Length: 74
Length: 305
Image 1: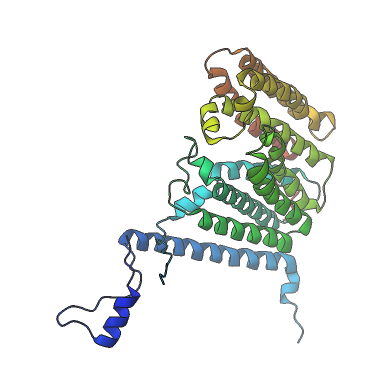
Image 2: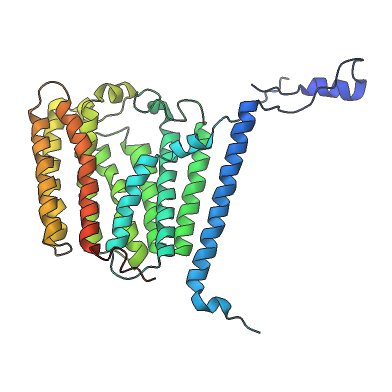
C-alpha cells in the first residue's frame, strides 16, 4: 500500500505554514517493506546481469583480438 | 475543471517472477536443441563465442516468452494451466512484461549480431517475431492450425545454432527444423486433449475445441506417422551413424504405438497423457543421440581451443 501526497495540501502547508504540534508529513510515494525488498532484489539482479554482460563483451573482445591485444601503435 | 492523476502502484515483483516470465522450461529445450545445432555444425567456433551464442539464444527465447505472456494475459487468466503466471496473478503488469520482453529481444539480437554473426542474429530476430506476432497475436486466437504453423518458431533454434558456427544454413539443420516442426502438433494436441475445457473457456480454437476429440486423435496419428521417418533422416542422409538410425527408429516406433493408443482411446486421457510425456523424452533422446553420435569420443573436439 502506498501514500501519495495531496498537491493542494502541500501548497497550503508550504505557504500557510504547518499546524502547530503536527510532525511535517513526508511528500512523495512511500514504499512498503515488501516493495522495498522486491526493488532491492530487482536492482541486484540488474547489476549482476550488467556485470555478466560486461564480462561477456570483455571475453569476446579478447578472443576476437587474440594475440593482437598486445599489439598497439607506439 | 477536474484533474485526473493516474496512480501506479509500485511493483512487488521479485526476480523469480521475471524468470518465470521467460518460460524457463521452454528456454531449456530451446537451448538444448540450439546446442545440438551448434555442435554438429561443421567448422570451428571458440567455446566463448559458442557460449555467447547460446546465451543470446536463451535470452531471445526468454524475450519471446515474456512478450507472449504480456499479450496473452487475458486468456492465461482463464486457463488453469496458465492462471498462475506472473501477469494474470498481478505480480507484473502487461506493460512491464512487454517492456522487459522488448528490451531482452533487442539486446539478444544485437549482441548475437555484434559478437557472433548477423545471419544467426537475423534468424533469432525472425524467430522472436514469428513467435510473438505470427503465432501469439495472429494464429493462436484465429485458427486450429495455430500450433502447426506457429511450431516453426520452436523449430528454428538448431538452425540458429548451426548458423552461429557456419554463418549460413544447409540441409542438415533443415532436417532438424523439420523434426521439431512435425513433433510440435502431436505434442501439443496430446496436451490439449485433456485441457479442452481450459482452451474452450479461453476461446482458443485448439483442434479438440473446434474439430472434436476424435479428429484430434486422428491428426495426432497422422503427424506422428510423418514424424517417425523424419527422425531417422539424419542417418538416411548420411549425417549420423547407424547407432543413431536404430535408436531413432526405436523411439519413433514407440511414438507411433502411443499415437495408435491415443487413436483407440474412447474414454479417459491416460494414453494422451502418456503421449505428451513421452513426446518430450522423444525429442530429447533424438537430439541427445545425434549429439553423442556426431561427437562420440570427442565431445568438444571440433571446437578450436
